[in-house]
Length: 271
Image (cartoon, rainbow, N blue to C red):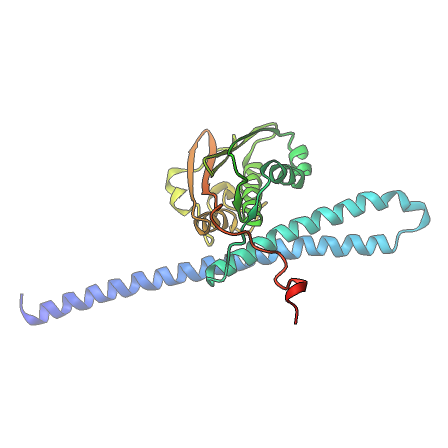
């Protein structure tokens, strides 16, 4: 092969490489645009509903006072969903920027589970879902970790399970604490995930079929946030899918760490 042919071959390879990079860049930009659009919808929709309901409350006449409680419940539900979406957005942003930190405290696991179930009480009732939950605590000392982050992980896992469960389906939640390791799993009876899409399940810019990695229909942040938080807490996450989807998280406790004082400025240290 003479020098001219070698040069032509190298130019062709460079052209192919450049074309591939351009295609990947266009795909990335498209995914990010869709991601931002999804974020905006998930913020604007509940915000608009809250504004509309609040305006209706202001203009209620005396003959319609019986509508106050249902409208207030709708406002509360939409505000809770908005808060949930924003928690994921802020968590993803802080993790991406390397600014997310861990705040250790004792975690009441039964209370944590009940709090999560209460949050999704209405969508669970709407789909007539059956919830099976089990808590096994075989630990001599309290479990110490970042409670808020564990709550956010469980909220996302249960949200996805509800979203993908058929009507009258069953969701199983298992919480097992043994030798200072928290094992948490959430399993649904949904359609599962195609093998070709499992690799994308934790990508915040990619939404696979059935919106398994979305949060109540939208942002695609859910499981990417769960995975990032699990790793931040020194744990790991696994996914299995057959008839339904099971997500398993294992997180070590941090009893060796001193508990973080919620008040950074105790009175006896002020001035």
